[in-house]
Length: 250
Image (cartoon, rainbow, N blue to C red; front, top):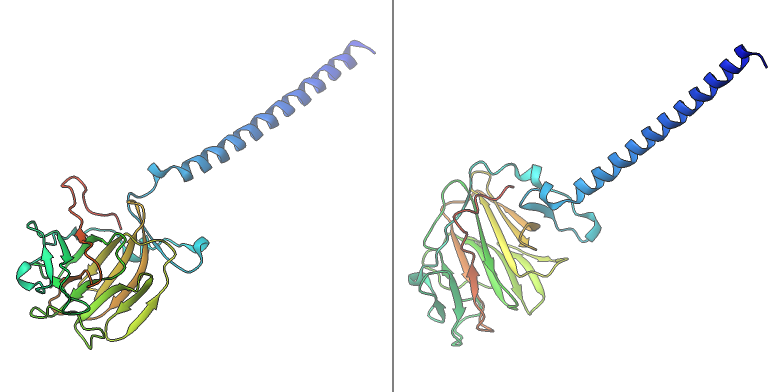
């Protein structure tokens, strides 16, 4: 083979090697990009501090409802304090107004107490720890002088209720049985007064909430209402948010 032929053979070999190396580099870059994307996607630090999702019957079907709730521009962590003057005589309210429990002297199925604070505008969020209690009711009420929640309210109540240990229902002018996928230890409530919405959430792990139920109604002045039931002495505990917590990102 003459020198010219050998020259073209060497050039062709070098060209092939360059192409192979280039393709290898491209494949490597693609693999690295995919891996980094997956890691970023799973990294909790890249997620909203508070994630709100639906709680459907299919555990694999959770869908984000952040968009439907909107950003928490004017949402406030409500300072909810129990008002002992509104408490049923069978209930005990803690001195700081953050807890209520049944004394053991049963006079009604659902003895109740209201908060000192009422709402006529704005968006408000509060949480209540229910723990292992088998009976309790939480929500809002328009009644200032009632100290017992009716078994079947005709109007003026919007509640989430647990009874008989594992039965859940949304309670207003009608009763709606509910099925929860996750154990419920703490309940979050969002009142959007202007939109006429009261939503209940399962505060599942401190950073994720699962939607349980939403009421829609044109409210008048309403007050958070609490009933620890009349079957055990376990307390309902209102969460006291720290000053540095900020507003939930909904």
